[in-house]
Length: 314
Image 1 (tube, rainbow, N blue to C red):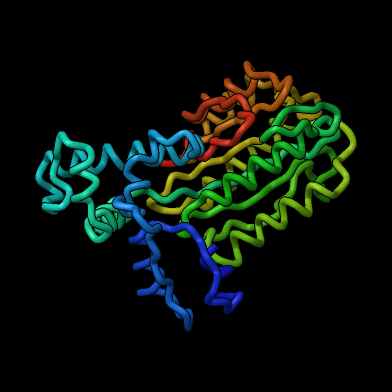
Image 2: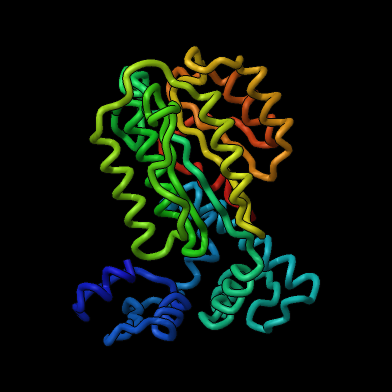
């Protein structure tokens, strides 16, 4: 949204932002037109208050609510321990008085301190693009779509929620996907800031219009290959995660069984974690076994997003 404001060169645009985000934009952006915060007439609550109460607002996404809860726990812990002693954020029983004391500057300082201590995330999306993904329909964000399209939309939504310092890349798999193997790298890992985020999003949209690979879904071999690649290219200090998106979980195209694949993943003793997201009639038992072998977990595909909140580091 902020990048679009700069590119449009139209100072008449209006957008909803928190006060400290306006401050950050004006102090770090090269835009010729700084943002000007406007408070609705008659309002007594600062815009930054919405961040503080996000967890209790009915209109926010599940991921935003989880982030708000984590932020609240962080601030409460820092204040109680004395590590964060800003007088504007001292505990108070009166909620209205608390909002009145929470200045944009105080909350902005707390958010920046929280962000600086947060762990980055490095994600490799492993997308099933075999013919099975177009043979089943599922519900996502109020639409009935093919499982493969739902998987693409889940990945797009996750990318849209990622922090600029987080990284993401994309692999797809299906019989014949690569020259000599059944998987291929679609987009190399990159920081999700500016052009890279929009570029990966566009790549996913472009992929959704391409024909799927005829034949089975060689998940087992593809996952082992992706896990080896991720562990060979770990981002130091980040949570390194593979997110499998599939409506199958059964694999007759790979030589090993699901049990043998789980044993292979466990024996590789890598630092990466696998999360399997199953759409529709996906084999939850198999996907759970594969994820658990790396310390990860199986996530039934949600109908309204929220996957990032389940895997993002606190």
